Length: 333
Image 1: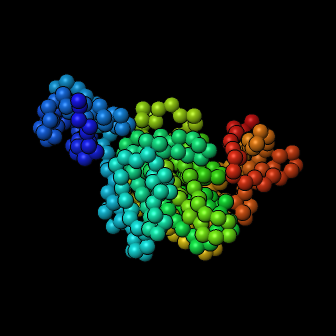
Image 2: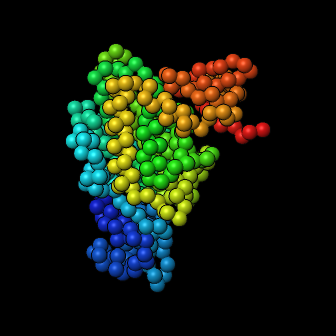
């Protein structure tokens, strides 16, 4: 019966291939202390993790693009001192079902706590959608935060988080990023990232939220597979500049998230309205809204002070809250 491979064994092989250069199978097998046949089985596992490993007779193996693994110590060192002192972690796992799920199960006494993963096997987005999460290609990050009292504008939290994410992405060079209500980051017509907020608690009392972020950093079309909407990556948006340093990006994102949650807890959504409005991808655009079986076609008119989407249709302004509302941006006639 074949022995189950450990994560450490697979991670050592990934590190041996991380530079993206050709490495002989003989050298990789020797470094791992295994036969060539056993090495081939390990490479097959890496492909199951979503890694693009190329093999060629006489040359060996290589990753189609170099890979930088996440490092909790590097991320923590890059955080501002005040954030580092407040935040528990971050922790980095190689493989997890869902970073959000793990933090939902974690002890709230450790909040605020952050978890990142190289690979998610059951990543999810809004309205039960799955989220493509190949190993080392993107950023999968969750932050658990406990509010002493239920925030009165909690429904607008995903918008405040969107502003924080956009700031981090812009600081990494993707200045064209926009926000699509209520929880998507976009470049042009393509999705760059998404936000999923899950909450626990009772209205009027203690409230705990798990803020989940997925950012497409360097995912290829092959790794993405068939998706039901246009998407892009930070690497594609940055062009010749290449993908950003994932550890630096993770630190910038965590710093922005902690600052945003502190501000939201103290002042609600008001401090974020102006920035969100400047980043609003739907403002002045034709939109189609689906809600509870009803369809509204109109024009995006921004958001109100509660974070509700405003759509003008046939002379009437509709204020729509997230829930089961679906927003689609329409091409101009």
